[in-house]
Length: 374
Image (tube, rainbow, N blue to C red; front, side, top):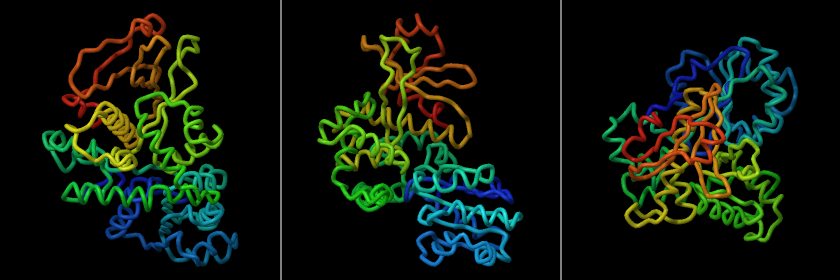
């Protein structure tokens, strides 16, 4: 079993605070917690948000019943906590009424859980994210040569736990198709009773084909035959379900720069490829550039999240067609990167240097990428 970065919640747990573990469905949140519980000396109670009895109890607001539910335990674990209405208030009662208790809540949709726990648990929570398995986690099991040897698999099939342990390409494809069809949009479709799964899939396909490109919501709305506000709302839900994320434009608010549009990436290459039903190898593809950019961007995000490095990331492009794939701003320092599958010489555009100076610049390619993501 691959050791996950947050595999020891002991380092994160605090009495009087709720540890919230976010992540997409099937990334391993439940497995992580259950494996850790096998070794903990804490007396714990494990419950699922799918349990109707637990839903009713923790959403009741009844102080005495909720206290009685947790009485005698050092730790309460609520898996899939976003399923419980007003879960934030229930967790607040536990924290306030039993100050020494420790609590873990896992959730696969931040649009439900974050809204419910945000205000009630102000100052009473610690939040971490769990992603599909990162290169930073795999390096604990493999050496650099082995990671590079498996690079094509990561680019095509991604790194969901079930996919990584699948032996054949046929089995990896089957698992990914099941993830997309049965799990990926479950939270989105449940939210506000959205029933048009076909429309969501069409939207995801359009985004999948535009990885690495600037996305026009107006153009997507036109192609789907819906209004732009609906497109924006659906994209927001997909982001809060940890399916996609956006990167905004860097600009000094100059008229010659593109400032109001985003790029969208998938949290997992395999999911992106399964959405568009393209699981063929790199030698038979014309989208290696998009696969590479999505992979590197996402592995970098995983790295910084797990290291708890806080930074801003952007892309830059002007109307003359000059561009930079990634700009990272951390502690007032700006670093810039270009993503190329093969080792290629590149330089910062002169238009950028004239306006912003000459920050560090690096081309990230298949030969040097590990230093960037580990």
